[in-house]
Length: 155
Image (cartoon, rainbow, N blue to C red):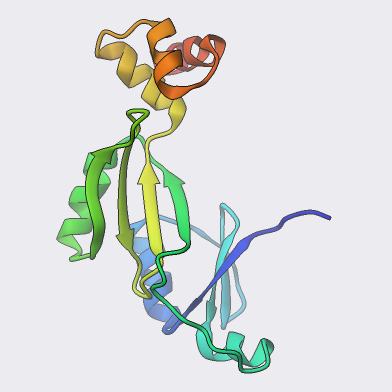
């Protein structure tokens, strides 16, 4: 068995497509009308159509029990773009206990979206702040080899 993608039900396929394309810079891979798959392999599906496929079971949005996770090394930049688009935040940019910068916000259907810097970029950033590779490995909980390779990648 092979995992293919995550699918979220949305109330307005056009609005959601515009959000993911224009705000989060995602590219459409397939457009089936009621179902759109983006590169990165997640899909949005028109809620009214999807409900028919699951025998009219209730679909509840905004449960805060699910998120789509994206990585982008300019977390502060995307947060500013989100503010300009009047996106509702779960929280603004903050550092996780392992120092990774993240921002969480809602898409138009109240699904949580997280954008965080990659652990590779985090390694580089922490090194630029004066931390040793050994200290960074302890902070983020990954092998020193990963940290050193990550620093080389961004240097």
